[in-house]
Image 1 (tube, helix red, strand yellow):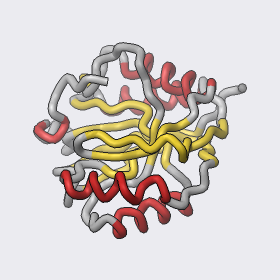
Image 2: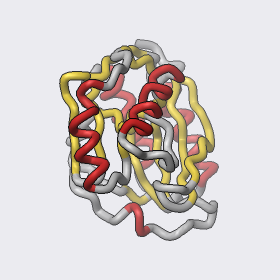
Image 3: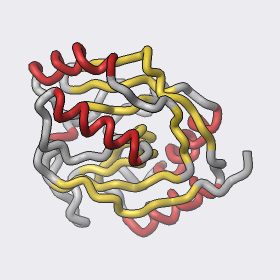
Image 4: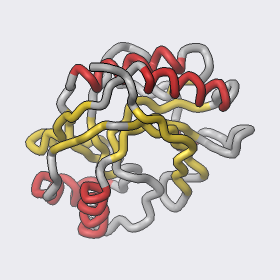
Amino acid sequence: MPALVDANALPTDKYAYRLYGVMAHLSPEQQAAVKDFHRSIGVTNLATRPHCSIHNFYDPTDINLLRQRLSEAAAKSAPFTTEVLLSDFLTWPSGAGFGVKAHPGLMRLHDNVVAALDGIVKLIYAPDGAYQPHTTVLLSGTPAEVERAKQLGPALKLDPKLEVKSIELIGRIGPNRGGEYRVIASFPLTGQA
């Protein structure tokens, strides 16, 4: 998915964030396994929580309207369980992750979030309909870290069951390395399957 802007070069906005995302976070046990993986490849200063990205964006026109719309999107989406595809280890120039099974509930949730964001945020990625569910295990990696991730990532001991019961609106303060990753609001998925 082609980036429309360099997310690392965005300025801080009127709400004190540089970048926003809607995420489905991994379980505490899965997060601990990813943090162990970070240590095994020499990464200790990532400002993120392991997650499945639903969407990333910046510069919301009104953060309260954003919260309201995301709450409505979550109310239209039912909880579901999908799977981290441990045989689908992905790398890109500055990161790594695993594919996530495109469960119908995840795809509906993504579509509901995209509709909620329409007209009130600026998107990081072109809205070309090519959502590729994945869970990021390395973000803003150096070439050496990405190479270590390629070597060690496929052996990461991670429970493949991904239970999605809520989505979180997150904001980033400062850089991905050494900055802060803040959960602004959490929205339970309360819709019917």
